Image (cartoon, rainbow, N blue to C red; front, side, top):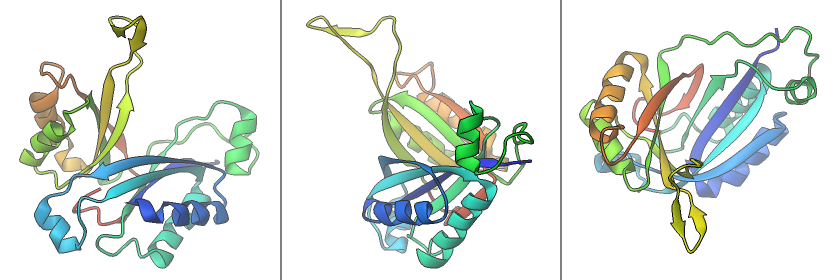
Length: 224
């Protein structure tokens, strides 16, 4: 069975081009780059020798072999296993729309592709969508439940009803995504804490969901 995975790499922005080049050389066809920032505790940042650096999140989609090759090169060539050099993780994809898209991404025939069974691992990625300005509130609630840090990505909503209107122009509400990599055993405590501190019953109007992680490289026990 052909397996496709989505690989996320979070590094300092100055390393984004090198990561993109490495991914292309390893066979990844699809990639996107998103600007973001970290939220780790000050003492952890001091230990790692870095500040609250601006970061880039690079996303690749490829076959299991391609994503494993990228992870290997990230560990060996970019020293991702060392403190402060970033983190990478993969999420298995359950399906892809279109035979030609599948062939392009995997480089294989699609007759055997029936979707990837989600892999049970020790890590989950907790994704929280909140109103702009409440990402730090979300992280504060998560830290109370044991989270070490996370990554904040700017975003915006697309709701059609009740949009703000300024001079006849509809303005979409600004959002933030908070990404927290956590051990599965702590997932429910973290999500409950986030719901209490920045959930739908608060001004943050946040909601969370969790995705299974199949591979991890980097300082997963400390931060994203």
